Length: 251
Image (cartoon, rainbow, N blue to C red):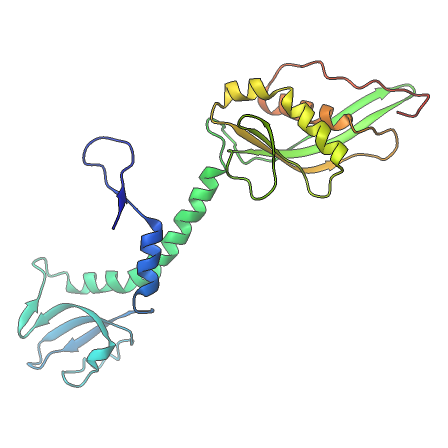
C-alpha cells in the first residue's frame, strides 16, 4: 500500500490512501461477516469469522462448511492459530465488524474532507451563510436588494465560478441576469486585495440568493449589495462605491 506522511516529527503514523482502502473493501468477500463458535475435529474450541451467522450449536468439524469461513482466530488441533493474549473472541469480533465499518469510515472521511476543503483558513465560521440588506432611501425613492452568500476555499466549488483576482472567485446564484453577475463581480473585485491579505490561500464567495423589487432597480445595485456583504462579513473599509438615484427616470 502506498503511504503518504503528514507533516510532523519522526514516527508519525502514516496516512493511508483512501482509494486503496476502498478498492480492498470492494474486492474482499462481501459482508456481512459473523463470528462463529465452532469445534475442531478433537472437540476443541475453534473461533472463526464466517459469511453465515452462528447457529449456537457449536458445530464440530466436519459438521460445518469450510467454504463459509473467512478467517480464524483460534484453531487448537493442530494448534496453529492462537494469539498469546488469548483475545480470540475480541479479534474475531473486530474482523467481522471491520467488514461493514471500514467502507462506512472511508465515506465519512471523504465527507469530512469535503467539509474541510470548503472551510476558509482562519475563518471562525467558514460555511456560515449570512444576508446583507442594501437600502438607499431618499424622499423621491430609493434602491433595495438582499444578498445572501457564504465563503469557501478555492477548489471547493461545485460547478461554474468566475475568477475575479488571482485566488478570489465568485459563484453567482443560478438564473441570474448577466448584468447583475457583472456588477456582483465588480463589488467583489473592489475588495479583492484586502481579502487576499486576510486569506492568502484565496477565497470563494458563493452567492445563494439575490433578490430585489422590480421598481427603482438598476444592475449596479448588485455591486453595492456585494460591497455591503463583504464589509459586514469581514469588517472591511468602505471603498466608496455609490450609485446615483435619478428620480426623473425612476432610477
